[in-house]
Image (tube, rainbow, N blue to C red):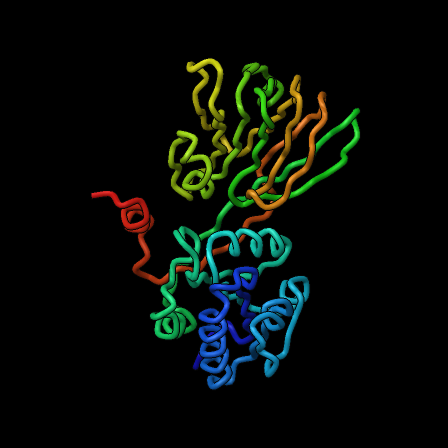
Length: 289
């Protein structure tokens, strides 16, 4: 097979015990299929351990970023989000095989994956860059934490309302009382932001959406701003509040903390089959008529 992808890493969702048996079989079939084409195949070390794929060489996620030409991710959107954040500093494109629920980011069906991946390895694919958010948390003027998010950065209260002050590019926007605030990439607008009443933004838009969660004042509505904007959210008053990244990591906030959000300098690349259409995906996932 003539392909630009000769070194391929396989990464799977291994935390869900009930789904592990099916994923193990799929990963074994895929690894064997690729190896038979004289391609170098590695399995991510935690995936290999839990799926008992001891016959293949393993790499850590950091090593995959340094070594592989392509990563194939088997699982759901949560698995893809975690891998994307881990590989943001590496120029490794991602293919997603859906073994989750919705599969907004993992669009290959497991039953079709061998045929579809062969086509994509032969060059029949669409390469789609996706932006991420870069976040720094300042406490008393010092950066205490930084991270990236492919979907969203969420500031959320505990039992009571939280008061937040929002500033964009040095200009005051609003002071709001709500259950929290979602700052979303276009990718993330079909996730938590959608449930909170936010707009769906096409992935090729250069934008960041700000969606209040259950605002005390109903006139406080979602807005979208240019992705070059520098957004600063100050935690003014609350009993307890947390900051999360893609719903997978949390940081406990203190009153006065400033959350600085901007577009990350680097992107990740998703590879889709040539017939992939974002609107088809939305219609199927959201059961539109």
